[in-house]
Image (cartoon, rainbow, N blue to C red; front, side, top):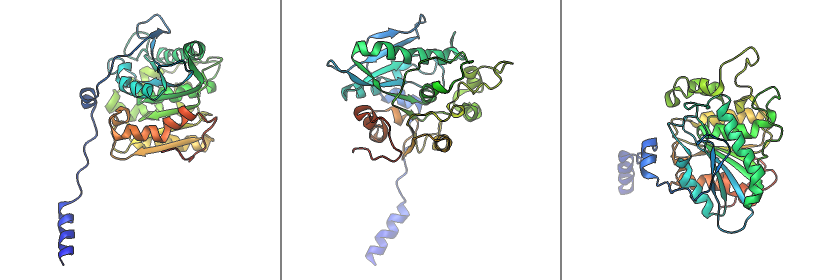
Length: 311
């Protein structure tokens, strides 16, 4: 009887309420972003066209995380420095970080095709210059958050872009794997689904307007229109993410799997959008365990879906 009373009392109390997901303002307040150790490497004449190199001590060659920040593809919302805490964490683990800055849709030269050309030029500079800097360009994983998740997946899709597109390049940087953290991989869907978070016309500015020669504006800009990607990728979502709910990644993963891609789709419990890029949050440990660590450090030629990862 006493045991029953205790059980009833616990039921009456209910389960503890889950903390609300971190907002962008809270992320900016809580996460200390260390300064970039440098150097900053220019890939174009605009001040935004540069890469921050975070390189571990030693001679290397070091595996590389090619990192792309989010911010709704808008420079006014976020720049590369929101990824500094992550870059510092990875650098301490012996991983070099190629942290890309690029022109957003809200600055001159951004949008279509500039934003895409910036990210592509920064990636290809890694392929050319990385070996001289002690970087192992055969072990590059692209990691992007939010809008950067879209751009990271797009980098993987570049070989699928038609030669008639201004975004086509002959020899894009090969990637071992892509990790999209709370990404927006389907721009046709994001044009309506991301309105509340990113603004009504943002995706239109990003992909450009249809013309007689380019009727499908997603054909060279949206990973969902360029499947299969042809390399392993992982989509990581927070279960409580209000900006990129897990359903977005699940839908894209299903489409990619049906197209023949090798994909993983992970949902982290009790995490929102910004916990995914907060090294002090439990979600970051899960990201490392489920995706980054295995692929960057051990660098298998291909990762089979469901392959166990070291704990």
